[in-house]
Amino acid sequence: MRDRFGLEVTTDSAPATALLDRALVELMEYRVSAMATVEAALAADPGLALARCLKGCLLRAQATRTLGPAIRAELALAEVERPRLGARERLHLDALAAWARNDLATATRLWRAIVRAWPRDLLAIRLLHHQGFWMGRRDLMREAVTLALPAWEEGREGYGFLLGMLAFALEEAGELDRAERLARRAVELNPEDLWSIHAVAHLLETRDRPREGAAWLARPIEAWSDRTSMRGHLFWHAALFELERGRGWAALELYDRAVLPRGRPTCVDLHNAASLLARLELAGLDVGGRWDGLAEQAAAWTEDHVYPLTDLHAALVLARTGRPEADALLASLERLADRPEEAAHDHAAAVAGPILVPLVRAVTAFYRGEPGRAVDLLLELGPVPSAAGGSNAQRDLLAQLLLEAALAAGRPELARALAAERVRARPHDAVGRRQLARAVAALAERARRTAPPPGGSVASGPHPTVPGLPRAVARLAVPA
View (spheres, rainbow, N blue to C red):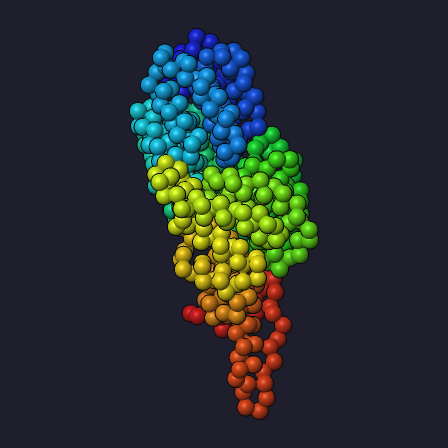
């Protein structure tokens, strides 16, 4: 039979095919119901191998090795059907098998082959795009769509999904004008497409338009309650806009009501919560005992190395709360880095040594009161490589930690330079202005202590605070 995109599916069941089609759209829209719809498709035809594959993909997308046995069970059931499957379906099974063992290089090669031969395969396009995201491969995010786009036209169902994916890839690469046009068009075509809504949010973040960004994401807390962890991530973006507007209290409220993970968190839930708490503290807010609630969740990832961004955020929580698992996590990553033979077929092993271990050491040092060591480690690494995964906005937390560490380590010149650069790029960001004011005040205080002018000393005034930076300070801090 053929699915709604005109692709051959090995089944005689029209109901199973229709349910598989629906599950794919639900996956694209981040609906919680996708797994139940896949199960319904399998109830209609237990031999529907692509439904087994999609179920395995939904499990693997949770990015935990604990689900490996469940994924392998689905693959085993699908493999029984291999002799009667078409070439596209067999490639999907092979790609899932590689993805399940975290061999992202092989998985992406196979998904690319599917997209080249069957450019209307929305599942392969989506998987290739998203693995490019987690690998920090902007080229792969873009290629996933550009390979397929000639086979699509605007009136075809699903076309908006492609525009949203391409828009996000362009935003990450800095092609902002075209990205914004495409992202907004994608949302017009499908207002339920959370990835495209997300792409617009990223563009407004990058373009320093926090007020517009807050308006773009203004929703009741119960909005998107039928969605997966992307719901919390969109509210994470909304909280960042509030922070940038100098409304830390509003960001904290969003944390409590919409970002804090409930039940067993996914890796994205952990990223959202840990990153937002860290940013709130860096902005000068007291978050109370909220860190403790995340510590148990973070400890569950100590040996579960899939995506570098998850290891990094787990390390942040464990170090911030003084948990002994912080040392266990770092030791586990160091052991992984010492197994170079695994790097060729395991993405976590490939990035552990050159990227992840230095980052985790730096974050751990920062939260253990060793800011000078954190500064040295981060400066030695240089700009956080995109291979750490995630978006520019997510990785920006490391830049903020470096700036704060420089202040804490008594290196105000470095802090001033970093903060001035941020303010030049984002003059509407209240957090950046606050950091710049603190760096300038630290320089003034050191000058007062070390070289008082004749006839008396110059007292340092109070640190300028959110939301504004006095013009005189701004002229001193930001060279023309």
